[in-house]
Length: 152
Image (cartoon, rainbow, N blue to C red; front, side, top):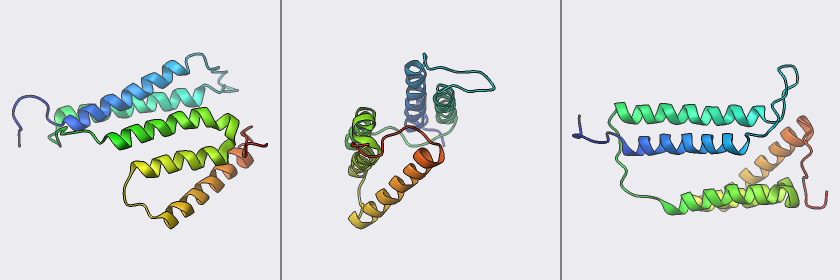
């Protein structure tokens, strides 16, 4: 079913552009991160791979939006856009001074406020599980030098 000339799936087109833009922005931010060597990878390799992954996913979604019919872009849900952006900014600003636990609490609270229908008990359990997993994976498992609490 053709919807006439013009955009076939405005939501997919915009989504693809947004993914690619975030990936390109992350590449620009990390342009001076050390890449290391094939034997000993530097700290810039993983962010670079994720950035290229975002650009690739954005391209795939964009092409899908060009080739298939889908939902048109009708309006913006500004609350989720603003709160998720604020969560990312808060993560960047809080992770060093406040530590992993406080930062995750703030970020997950903002993420929950961006959505609807969350139950407080389920959210609290989710936060607890995610914090424990983050500490287990990043601090204990990988030995990353991340402060867990502000006083560490």
